Length: 67
Image 1 (cartoon, rainbow, N blue to C red):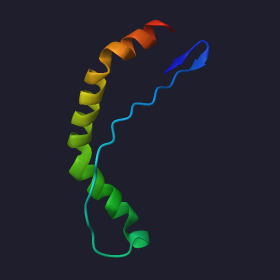
Image 2 (image 1 turned 180 degrees about the vertical axis):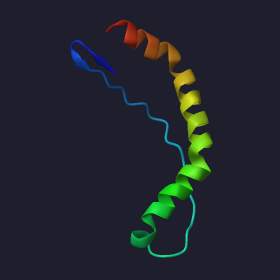
Image 3 (image 1 turned 120 degrees about the vertical axis):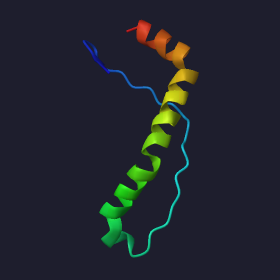
């Protein structure tokens, strides 16, 4: 977030676990791996982020109110 004083950042610790397999060497499969991860986890990651924000909503609002 930007405001007149600079950039505001906040780290939220809530790791989301990702896993999977794909045949071949990683170097030659990078684009395919990225596409597989995005396809398999896109909605799951969105749901996870919404849950994290909902959990920390009060703290986030309080911090933003101080800007």
